[in-house]
Image 1: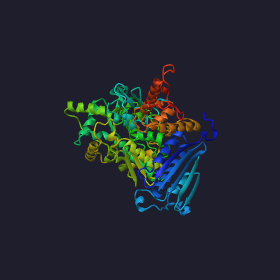
Image 2: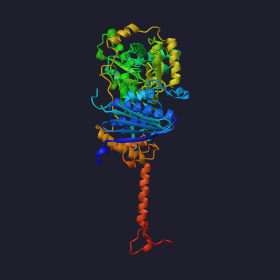
Image 3: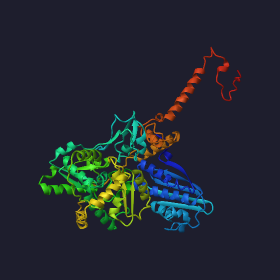
Image 4: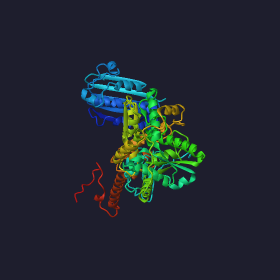
Length: 147
Length: 458
């Protein structure tokens, strides 16, 4: 057994996500869901984490140039960190409102960009932190705690 | 009923299995491994969808069904005929003659499941219209879809409409009717389903959502088709049987027909187990909550596409639609009001909760599972990522999982094995070059990095 007590229970996965790659949108979220299911986490935790991951992933695809996602799992819960290089969010409070979207028309026609991304992540997570700099990018951290 | 362990209709005929790896890749729950030249089904994962039966070119995957000899256990025998069965016959009325042929094959009565489909459609409608049920409501008519949800979509179980599949309700109705008609005690009346798929067989032998099934067995539609064809060719005059199924009930035989018959405001119909998975992914993400009702069928084409159906499902759909229009009954046997009463009395619902089946779980406790997951990730990095299946697992990732579970070895990967053999061979060549100092020259010694060895220039 591992002698490294501090990191023994933490499992991490890293992914990269490309802007405008709609064909691959959802792949990261699917892998995260599968992983969490195999870890045997509570089904509602799995579902909430999968939704948060999916929304964070599609946000990068729709708005950013490129980004990365990280999954951290411990006995405490599931953490999803999404970091991107992109336009950033000018007004985070506004972006958190249901239906607010800056997605262009052609993206909405694909069924994305309904303005529910961040509100959905908020609904699914127990902790949500967003840091953003206009013209640089956005970092999002969502935490779903184990029951 | 087996208390522990699983019954599966989908099974392997070892004598026909060549150990090819076609089936392992199509399985939606990654339930098959090839070991020692034969496919093995991981029992707790199998959902009896029949995908492997369709894929197997050697016909080594089969569906266990009952034979005619099961009929002998009963005094009065009822054949329950699914709507899809009517799609097997030419639309000139051959279908109703075929039902008459069933009476020559040992059945005392034929009962169309389409009659019960109308009742189920009405009950689904009532549930959706109540506005109190989870959206989207998901049909529970396909037993393979229910099992897929237990394994992979446990959080969507509350969205499953808590109404029995039409075939169960049909068995209940037919037995009750037969009992009143003949005065034969209930336990001596046998109800047998002419099944288009293995999932329905499993649903009878090991039901989900109820303690026991009202059905006593299932005979393969393909087998019955052959027997009926024989009767039809040998008998000149067979009576035509009146159909009691309405065109609405008969629609349940083809993909999309169920949704048409429930007629919610907003509906989605999906067929094919892999397509069902991707729709359920969307539901789980909360993206389809504007939809009232989802019809989900494991087989492409719906029940007409079941792997025990001998007809192409597209031709079958055309025939079924024509038969429904020409011979279908004008009025439902059970009215909407009667269906409402049955539903409110709890006659149509499940009697047992549907539980999740977390069979993908790596270990009972999280810290052990986290350790295993780390092993899986490092193993996946090592593997070639070709998903060739030569190791007997469906993908490199699933091999890594099997290794972490202690069910496989890294050398099961032929690429890693070859790599190991190459390393070993190189080591052997190296060793073979080594010569005892008493026999060899100084420059036979291998050069050492930075060791300033004598330049070997011949």
